[in-house]
Amino acid sequence: MQRTDIRLSLPSKGRLGQAALDFLAEAGLRVNKPNPRQYNATIPSLPNLTVLFQRAGDIVVSVRDGSVDFGITGMDLVAEKRGENGQVLVLHDALGFGHSTLTLAVPEDWPVQNLDDLRAYAQTLGRPLRVATKFPNLTASFLKRHEIPHRLIWAEGTLETAPAIGYADMISDLVSSGQTLRDNRLRPLSDGAIQPSQAVLIANREALQTRPEVLSVARRLLEYIEAHLRAQENLLVIANMRGESPEAIVERIFSRPTIGGLQGPTISPVYVRDGGPWYAVTIVVRRDQLPDAIADLRAIGGSGIIVTPVTYIFEEEPPRYKAMLEALQNQE
Image (cartoon, rainbow, N blue to C red; front, side, top):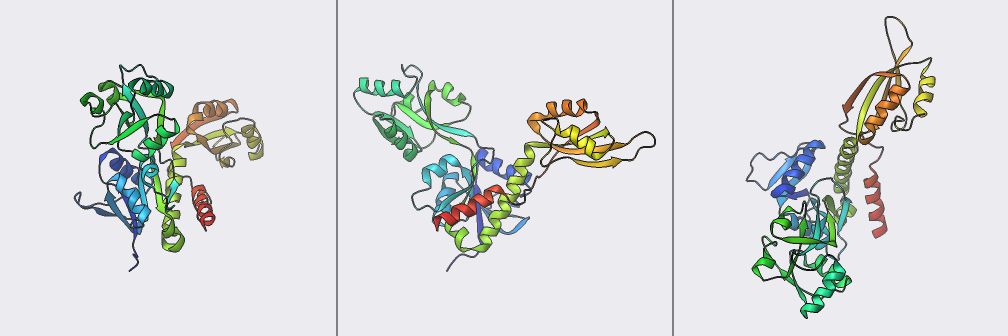
């Protein structure tokens, strides 16, 4: 019997798990999990969606085989486990948390800085390098592409101790700050980055193609996520400005590079007891351009400037939703 519910899987533990819950809550998609020992939950704003909790790597497999419709996990795991059936579709590749890079690292005392050095060092050893990893597919493909003789060793738990213990020569592991490598006297190769990663939203292609209700949830997820991420990059700025007319103020605003807003400013009259005419100018400004925007507003007569965060900026249609529809059509 075909499954009728709609499922989203989230990481069950670790920093990625908590970060996913925090991210969804900030995007207006708060997960309600009354019992912390339960492996299912709900999102009140999406009442027809069931939330499940799995190991981050299992999420990719579940989406791939269709037992789950959506998942949030790391791009490193998607690249490693998505398989060849084309069922794992990446809906959003930059959720902004869970950053790391799958990287080759060698002992600090090796005379090796890069892949060319590593290839030469393997020749001096006269045997393939033993590489401990939890990512055999990505690691093997990278080493083969760079003609590094190797033998992979699958390892559970902490990889950084493998060279010190002696069951591997080097490792291929996820690196964030690099502190754990340094603590274990390991060094990443300068050109040894195999796969950059952060949290991504994935979906099962067949479910999107055959179940309209799943497609509808995909749009809702992408709409809220994209509106939230776009809002994080921008601020709402309101300034009072004296001027002969709204058109005259617009001309001044458009003469400055940082205060044009998304499409343009919103201008409304300010009713003052004496003097005037005054207008209130409302614009959206990129967060990283705020100092320049304040300077530009002051230069054209802006005063009483108010800056406030933005919760959402909704597009007419989420760009990644349109990209998803195109990807589905290209598959057909």
